[in-house]
Length: 368
Image (cartoon, rainbow, N blue to C red; front, top):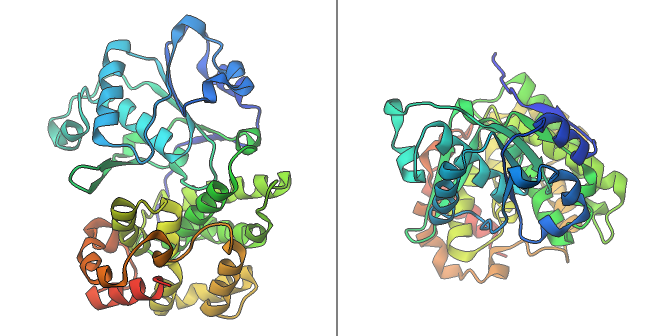
């Protein structure tokens, strides 16, 4: 058995002080965040390097090739000592690819993906990732997702050298997270953990983190409401971290593969797109993970997959749409989606091999 994750974690800390400590003095920092965050009081405690900081705040949701190439072009001229990402998965993924492009001296995402063994490594900026959503786990994984929105393709930039150096968790950064985003990101973490459990690459350590994540989410998801209680928020942040640590060693599987065309074609938020297929897939995959079912059901305080699905659907009802039909998908479009749902490197991780009929059944079950 092998498990590897080099990210140094600072949990439930004051992010301004921690980032300042990690950054040191007189370092050039390239800071990625969402538009508006740089005007917040918390940001003022972080951006204390003054003239040494440059902020990129126009980060695109589900970042495109073009948006990252633009940031990468600037980064090559700026040559930061530190890349700091404060935001959700899109912000952290954008910063990851830019830092990676600097390291391998590449000027575009496609050039970086095609570099292979000819890549020449240079200086790698220190990378500090500070999540503001409790779902993606990008702060403790080595890959980043990039979208070609013209050709409707998804790319994954992956390399063992692209883990962040530090992940800093501060629950205050999550306080104003809208309820829908809170629910969607929680469902994303839930999906990561299930995908790690029914994965051909699973191991006892990844399983442990996955079980702990699922336990915390099931305990707290029905308590997600406006305002979210502070203790609930803290436990969901912890759950998201566990999920990231879990799938950082397994990668994702069928649920994520199915989710990609749902996001590309219909704009379904990622956390919802990858969690809707979970329960049909659990019925398919349970025969490949029978040794894990007792612990899973015990942690969730249910007896079978149907009870678990009911529990989750009840918790998210009225908070987020949770059926394909609610996102404008037409039933006669399901057949043509099947082939698009097969991303080889994701489907290959699933513990049970799926065929087109299996995927069509899953799509049918999540339609209404």
